[in-house]
Amino acid sequence: MFPDEYISNISERIRLYKELNEIENEDSLQLFEKKLVDRFGPVPDSAAALLDIVRIKWIAVRLGFEKIVLKNDLLIANFISDPNSGFYRSSLFVSMMNYVNRHQRQMSMKQKEAKLSLTIKEVRSVKAAIGILKEMVTGI
Image (tube, rainbow, N blue to C red; front, side):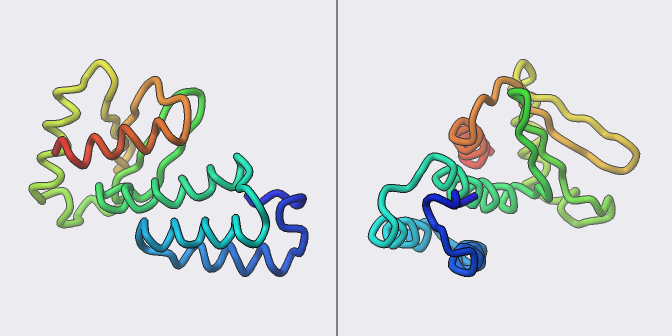
């Protein structure tokens, strides 16, 4: 989140959250960050993490994840919840399964009820998560 000390006006923070939510690419995100710096000063760590979460969201969508949780040095990514989705018959899904099989020491799949998830161990930060997910994109 944007700390109160960084952006004190609540309505301004809400407007910026909405604007951030609509950003769709890295260039626009960097421009958004530059505007923050110009207007409010250096971006605090918590705000920088928020920008990184947007980056994770983009990669997650690209990989077919609906939700990602990062806690206790684990990244848990939930795949598309509809088991009848064409995603599960796509070459992307097959490539991801092959990638996970090649990285079994760090990654594992789990199915609970009809939900499929990927767990990645030793992910200690948002930046590390971005790096691993980018590696997956290039490795599949």
